[in-house]
Image (cartoon, rainbow, N blue to C red; front, side, top):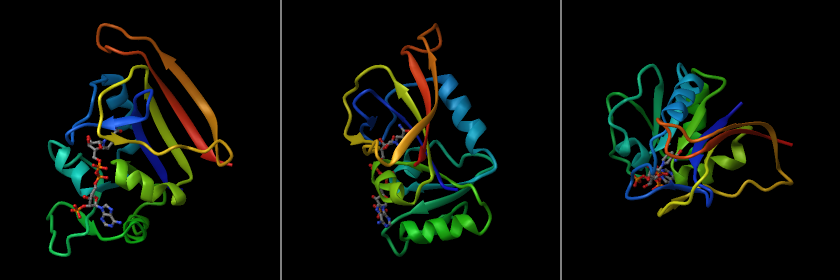
Length: 161
Ligand SMILES: NC(=O)c1ccc[n+]([C@@H]2O[C@H](COP(=O)([O-])OP(=O)(O)OC[C@H]3O[C@@H](n4cnc5c(N)ncnc54)[C@H](OP(=O)(O)O)[C@@H]3O)[C@@H](O)[C@H]2O)c1
C-alpha cells in the first residue's frame, strides 16, 4: 500500500524556488499524523528543502548522483529501488514529493492524500493530474480560512479504482 501525500493550490501548484507556497498548521499536523513512523520517499531537492530530518520517519532519498551519501538516510537511484527499500521496513510507505518524484511514483501508488489550498500561487513545480478513470475520491473535508490559516483548504483521499 503506497501512499502519495501532497498539498497543492487550485492549479496543482506545489512549490517555487525549492520552497513551499503557504503555511497551514493544520495541514502540517495532518502530514505528521499520517506519516509518523513510516518510511518516507522523497527527491533529493525536496530533502534539501527540509530544515532537517523529519523525526521518527525512515528517509529514502532519490538521486541520480551515484556518489550521494547521507548518514541519516537511505539513498536510492530509481523509484523501484526506493520502493523496495521502503518495503524492507514498512508495508505502508509514503511518497513526499516533489514534482518529479510524484510523477515517477504515481503508477505505483494505491492512495493519494491531497490537501487542496483554495487559492492560486506563482509556482515552478506542479502535481500531476489524477485521471478520473483511474482515481476515485473517497474522502473530502473542507476547512475555512481562520486566524491561523490564510487560505481555505480541504483534505481529499483518492484511491485507485
Ligand atoms: N506542496 C507539497 O506537498 C510539496 C511536497 C514536496 C515538495 N514540494 C516542493 O516541490 C519542489 C521540489 O520538487 P522538484 O520536482 O523540483 O524536485 P524533487 O522531485 O523533490 O527532486 C528531484 C530530484 O530527484 C532526483 N530524481 C529525479 N528523478 C529521478 C530518477 N528517475 N532516479 C533517481 N533520482 C531521481 C534528482 O536528484 P539529483 O539532482 O540529486 O540527481 C532530481 O533532481 C519544491 O518547491 C518543494 O518545496 C512540495
